[in-house]
Image (cartoon, rainbow, N blue to C red):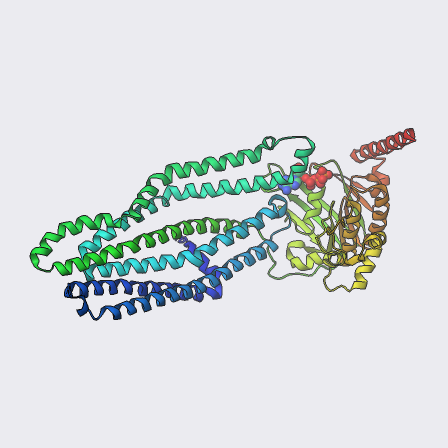
Amino acid sequence: MKEKKKSSVAILLDYAGSHKGLTFLGLALSAVSMLLSMVPYLCIWLVARDLIAVAPDWTQAQGITRYGWLAFAFAVGGILLYFAGLMCTHLAAFRTASNIRKRGVAHMMQAPLGFFDTNASGLIRGRLDAAAAETETLLAHNLADIVGTITLFVSMLVMMFLFDWRMGAACLLAAVISVAAMFSMMGGKNAKLMAEYQAAQDRMTKAGTEYVRGIPVVKIFQQTVYSFKAFQQAIEAYSSKSEYYQDKVCRVPQSLNLTFTEGAFVFLVPVALFLAPSALAGGDFAGFVTNFAFYAVFSAILSTALARIMFASAGMMLASTALGRIDQVMCAPTLKKPPRPQKPQDSRVEFADVSFTYDGAASPALSHLSFTVEPGQTVALVGPSGGGKTTAASLIPRFWDATSGVVKVGGVDVTQIDPHVLMDQIAFVFQNSRLFKTSILENVRAARPEATRAQVEAALMAAQCGDILEKLPQGMDTQIGSEGTYLSGGEQQRVALARAILKDAPIVVLDEATAFADPENEALIQKALSELTRGRTVIMIAHRLSTVVGADQILVLDKGRIVEQGSHSVLSTAGGLYARMWADYNQAVQWKITSEREVE
Ligand SMILES: Nc1ncnc2c1ncn2[C@@H]1O[C@H](COP(=O)(O)OP(=O)(O)OP(=O)(O)O)[C@@H](O)[C@H]1O
């Protein structure tokens, strides 16, 4: 059976969780407040009736003061209940939006890390944040307005029969035309257009983020804003979408809507003129005038009600597209947790016939990789750019899951290990490790939150960070990025290594840890690395072949396959790809030394 699509409101109420009741209470209060606000109109009718009945001897109309107070009391009561209702719906809306944010973030925490390579984390966060905020308006205001206005229309129907259904129908006719015009802007094809408009807005935000990131390049190469084609095209696409929507979808219905929102009177007057002669002839002209006075005043609240419906429907549309965007975040892939997790036995890493293809890629990034790294061994992954080194290393901590074959840690398939336990087994040092904008202490302690100050300090010392701590005003309590406290790339790398040392994981994955360091930093980083890797299983990705000479095993990856495997001494004389790379590397080093001598 086809599953019925849930409405936006139902989805939002799911997110509201325990605050669902508060939303219902708010809506009920809003409905009751609308009913109370009808009473003053009834009082007007009663006053008009009494006045006309005693005219011209107004002193005989003794009930009107009572009606006046009654109208006042109900009006105030209506306002108070309306505010009480709004308080409930606001509270529920804030909680719901906060639940959406929390659930989104919790879901993201379960996404494989590789997901963030292809989906900018800033965009995901922005999307979740903005979309959650957009749902707030629907729950806090729009829903209460919709419920209130439905109550109003129902009570109007009752009032139609209560006094004179013909004049009541005249008032309603304007409302019906106005609502019909409004819904024609939102239904079917137009809803799709609205979704396209929102998508164009999303693309513009994304292109804007890319543009801001690329500003240094734009400046260095003296380009203008127009050289950033993607951003410019995204802006143009957005403006043409919004113009199209405004022009083709909104213009006529919006004009109709506006005309009839203000025009309830238009139908009432001709109907009254038509009815007047028979009322005169029937002898109940006083009753007729009273009814007319009532509907004339009553029709004025129609425009307020319609304006509320208009805002509410716009809010509904916004919320439904916002929910669509939230859904995209919630549908992001997550790491499947094993039903019966197993514990890794040791720090052995094993690839058994592993292949991997990135989503949407035409060819595999890795094909039938098989190798074993015994506990305590160091294996280096080398090879031409795009060969698959980073991809292979990424499969160990499950940044991605293998498309086929098995990656094992400690003899257990990584997909059968609890993700937290797996992460505890592995320290990953990236090419350019990011530090948080907090103290050095907290940056390092991120690896092991329960670590003492002394343990953090020991890790910093082991990572050769003594000189960094000395020059900083508050040592390891100095906030990174504050008041001119910036660390160089090599220094940041050493702090990141201290983090990895503190983690004390049995397996270490190093992705070009020394790639961007200057010679002085490189020597320190090498020292820090030997502290980090001592006695551990190490998988290192390296471009500088000098760093892999001592590795127990070198795997040469080319086009996703292992083309050579062995120790440096064997491979450098085997006449294959590694030997050529080694020769090229030595030539480059020779060239560097010669050119440096010439400069001297
Ligand atoms: N997130 C991704 N989505 C799609 N394809 C990717 C992604 N990351 C890498 N690739 C592709 O997978 C292949 C292997 O890339 P990988 O980064 O693993 O190579 P590498 O050997 O580490 O290269 P380098 O030495 O330049 O860092 C390449 O063809 C690359 O274009």
